[in-house]
Each structure stands twice: as structure tokens, then as C-alpha cells.
Picture 1: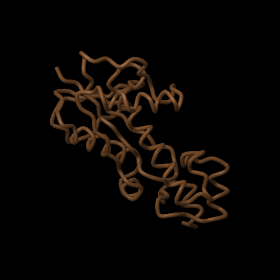
Picture 2: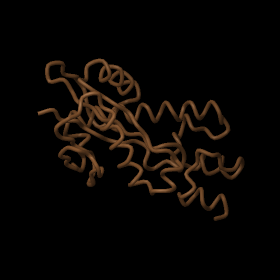
Picture 3: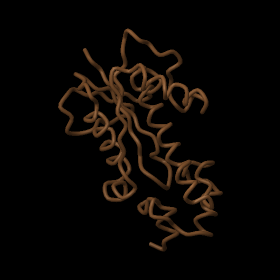
Amino acid sequence: MLVAGADEAGRGPLVGSVVAAAVILDPNNPIEGLNDSKKLTEKKREKLFIEIQEKALAWAIAEASAAEIDELNILQASLLAMRRAVEQLDIQPEHVLVDGNKVPQGLQMGCDAIVGGDALHAEISAASILAKVTRDHQMIELDRQYPQFGFAKHKGYPTKAHFEAIAEHGVIDQHRRSFGPVKKALGL
């Protein structure tokens, strides 16, 4: 049975898209060192990011924008991004394993939610790595456009430095307006 893993990165930050990935691994071409992306060093994630794309039977990366997050809420936007990633796979799986306690609606195959699945199932670990590295790359690019915010360092998370940058420079289009600290900065 062809099984895909799906996971997201970027639920907690105040800025940017939530990024999801879906991966179908090749049982004949195993990848060593897969784990929850948060348990790996940046260097190891970057190495695995390339290896997963080279060795997986299929992989896809999708996202839901800050505007979609504001419209739907972060949970629904995360599930939407995961559904998009699964639907974009070149090979459609017969089953999907999703990290978390909810599954995306509207998929045409069976789907199981697994809490802590990114540390338990290689497919979900691989998806976790693709999503995290992609999101980190987006934050590095956003940092080039808005160096005053320090996105390359805090990746958009609600840190003291990020709050100070918002206070000094205001909110940019990519900020999630439905998130408390951004709402507060906008006086909403």
C-alpha cells in the first residue's frame, strides 16, 4: 500500500505562510536519520531536505498564506496546506498519515491523524523536514526584504526581538493580522 506522510511547519509564528509537505517514501531506497524536524540540527535538516527530494517516490510542498490564515484560522489553514500538498503529489497514495490530532477534509483516500507522528513514522518525518526547511528558507528571504525585523534569526516567532521590531517598524503585509500581538500592534 502506498502511504504518504503529511506535516506542516509554521503554526506559531506571527508572519508568513503555514507550509505543509506530503511525502511517499521508496521502501527500496531508505533514508537514514529521518526524525521530527525539530529534533534535528539545521545542517542535518538541509542535508535530508535534498536527500528526501532525490529518493522519495513522490513529494510535494504547499502552503496557506497569511491572508488565508486570517480568514480561516491557523488550524484550518494548516489542514488546507496539508490537503494541497497531498493533492499535488505526482503519485496519489492509498492512505495518508498526518501529524497531529486532526485530518484534512476532502481527501479522496483514508487518512489517520497521529499525535507525535513526526517522531514515529518516517513518511511524516520526511514531510516535517521538507515543510520546516521550506518555511525557514521563506523567512530568510523575507529577512532580505525586511532586514529590520530579524526574520532569519527568529523565523517569525513571537520573540522579544520580533515584538520590538513590530513596535518600531509597524506591521508588514505578511504579518498574520488575526494573531493577538499583531492585532494589538494594529490597534484592533
